[in-house]
Length: 374
Ligand SMILES: *Cc1c(COP(=O)(O)O)cnc(C)c1O
Image (cartoon, rainbow, N blue to C red):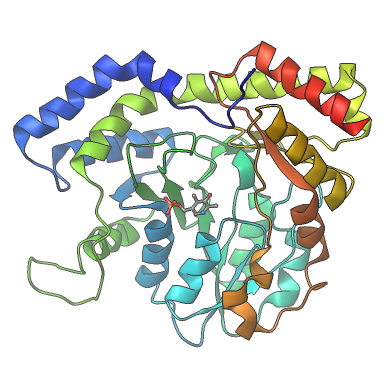
C-alpha cells in the first residue's frame, strides 16, 4: 500500500468543475492583477478569520515581511519569535534588517513558551511573532498580555493555522496582524504561491494596501517604499471556491487525528510515542500536521527509513531549529541554548493526515510502526 504524506489530486477531482469554471472566467476577463476577485476573496477570508479587514498578498513570507515594513521595523530593532518554525518566520525579521531574538518552545505544544518571553525583552524589542505550529494556537492570552504591558506589536504567523481557534477566537484575529499562506500544502492552498494579512485596525489596513503595491498612493506617488506583494486574480478565484470546503477538510483532519490516537492506543504505541498534545486552553486544532515524537534521533531516523521502505510518506518539520541555521551564525547562538527545540527537532516525525487519506492507510501506518519499533 502507498500512503503519501500529502496527495492533493483527490481534493482537486472533487472541485475540478467549479474551479475550472472560475479560472476560465478570469481568463475571459483578462484581469489578472488584483481586481474584483481578489476583493471578493479578501471579504470572504476576513469573515472566515473573524477579522475586520484582510489584504491578499503574494505569499505567507511576503505577508510577514510586509507587516514588519508597515511597522517600520528595521536595523537596531529586535523581534522575538520561536526557533521551531519554518524558516520564513525568522527570515522576514532578518530581511528588514532587524534582529531575530529566539525564545524556546513549550515541550507539549511546540509553540513559543510565554514564560520565557519577558526575560528577552529589551528597549530595542518592537514586536513578537508567535507561530501557531502545525495548526494549534499558541498561548495568545499570555502573549497579548505581555505585548500590551511592554507596548509591542504582535504579528501572528498563522500560515499553518487558518481556522484554528484559541478560546473561541480565530487564528490571526488576536494580534495586530495575522499572516496566512496559501502554499499548496497548507490547509487552504492555491495553485501556486499566495498569502494574506488580516487586521482589525483600519489605519494598518490602509497601509498594507499601499505597501502591497510599491507604496504607491496615489498611483506613481510614493511616500513609502513597499514592494510587489500582490495576490493574482487567478489564485483568488481558486481560493474563493476552496474556502467554502475548508471547514469540511479541517474536520476530516480532526477525525483522522482521533483515529490515529485510537489506533495508537490499541497497538500500545501511545506509550512508546508521544502523540500531538492538546494545549491547556481551549483550542480548535486544524492539524496542518500530525507530528509525533520518538524516544531519540536513532529511533526516529530508523522509523523514517522503515516508512520509506513500506511506501509511507513522512517528513521532519523541522530538522534544524532556526537559531542553529548557518545564516544566523552571527547572532551568536550555540547548541544547548534552546534545549526544547533542539530535542524536538531530533525526535519529531510528521505522518500523513490529509483529509482524503483513509482508515486503511492509517491502520497500515500504525502496523508498520508497530513492527518497526519492536
Ligand atoms: C509556509 C509557512 C510560511 C511561509 O509561507 P509561504 O507562502 O510559503 O511564503 C511562513 N511561516 C510558516 C510557519 C509556514 O508554515
